[in-house]
Length: 311
Image 1 (cartoon, rainbow, N blue to C red):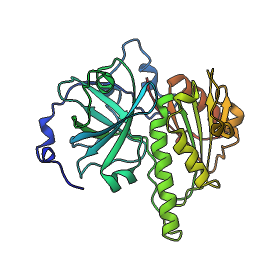
Image 2 (image 1 turned 60 degrees about the vertical axis):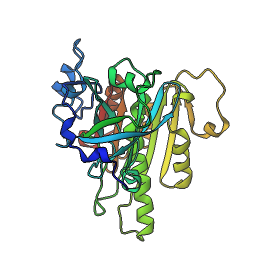
Image 3 (image 1 turned 90 degrees about the vertical axis):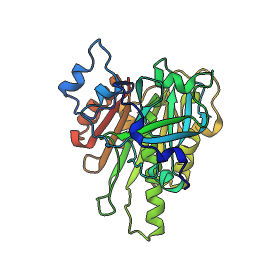
Image 4 (image 1 turned 60 degrees about the horizontal axis):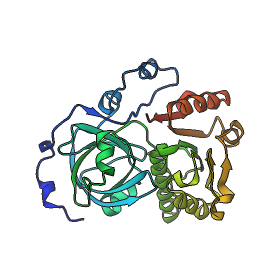
């Protein structure tokens, strides 16, 4: 991968603002920190994630592609510095020159794509918050060639070593909470390919099931790629798409995977084994609270329920 000349300048040339967007917190359901974060004053991204792990370095980066993932979500392809790294499920502090607020966006690509192409991807929903608004602004504030800076953070990730015991993943997403879970799903696909190529010497996932809830099928991000993964590895991957406000006809290829209404206890129970299941949740706080309680009622311990909330 060739290195753009602007990367040769020090990352410290980007200012270190003190505000931001997304909440990414990994705590047990009874955490006092979580309760305090429900106060009326809305904390910004850097405040909410102050106790999370972070890399020290801020790396220059450049937008190299913009895709309309849905009517409300844009996917950015970002060329990053060769020293940049992340684990599937993590997020970035997103620094924009001239914008005081710092964005917080989960990667929706795999570490494997970064290794192959030097690219990371972010799927960002429209919002009036300055970083998201900059990405969506019709007056071309964010364009191919726009320069930004990124820093990896977060304790919500799946990064098994080849010798780690096999687990069954249960991934539960609400809305754009799919982003880090899609990264984990893609990483799991890469791990399966590696394990096949090595003759079984790399990490071998048990299974992975995705429960993904959105208002309608138009808001189900990455659905075609998710279905493709399920069809490539039918003995490993499965998914349920739950839509709560569908008012139009559904594409026939989605029918085998589609359920109407919210994710039910029965759906979850079918994919929980207290001895093998490792669950990753990402979505609105009320959804995370309810599903966490349900999973614990099924016998899953707190250390096997990892979650990240978005506000």
